[in-house]
Image (tube, rainbow, N blue to C red):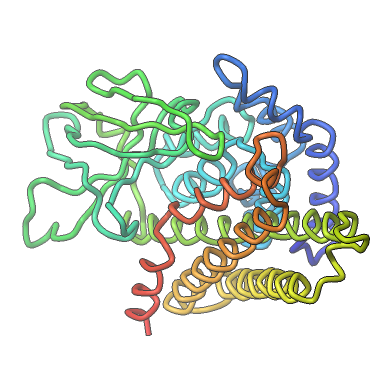
Length: 375
């Protein structure tokens, strides 16, 4: 699924696809992920050289794009190739937070991030609703503050050099009611422990435990528009990226499934000639078109619409992508038969990634409720 509309976007999409076709073919990816430890950053230096990371940033922040459509076309290509590198978590979500911070630290991190020298990811645990208040508590102290709490299932925590940790203020006053803050916490910070593990889709994750982690004042990011608003915008851009990634995966699943049904024969005729299977593949095609339309609408909304419309559009895109992705993923597995769940076939890997996406940044049910509240 290619969301490019300009010549520059089309060139970026084609260059990225050539890189992924050559360096992230299915067997090469499987071999890297079966190493001890798994190599989950093999493509990251090449992403930096090609400008894929820089494409998530505007010109004022060492990049050349930074718009929602570019994020979508990159995410779709990465989804189609099942890349496990932390583009969405690092360049898009964390990158948006850093771009909107007036702190000197943010500028330094952006330069290192665009060059592929550092990986930082958002560590935000608000339970089932990503837009709720974070569970980590921040308490003021001399020359900074102290963080205490747990952040569960941080995607790419295994390869991150540090984390943008969101925290609620422990001292709730009338002037700080509902206030949150975002802090840069290096991986080697005293009091921080990271328990890493493998996620269902082959990427890495981890749980963070913060016990009296001291953060200097310089490590607390400053924002002109408020940390909560910037965080919510970053989450919505992340939701768009997940929906676009789903579009790329669904397109790949449909092509593989339709080709299989055309080639596989039963009773001397192709499976594609069976009317019941034609109805099922038609539903898969419709689901892909619905996801693409929802993503395109969300892209336009993020670029031109008022805040409430942007929020509703990204909620809708996440719901449509999760629902349609689930249907296409399950149908692709079933129509391939027993080998649809085998590790040797990419169909099962696509299905696992779709299952992981449905749990990221809130479920479809969570966003249905949020969508209703925005109306």
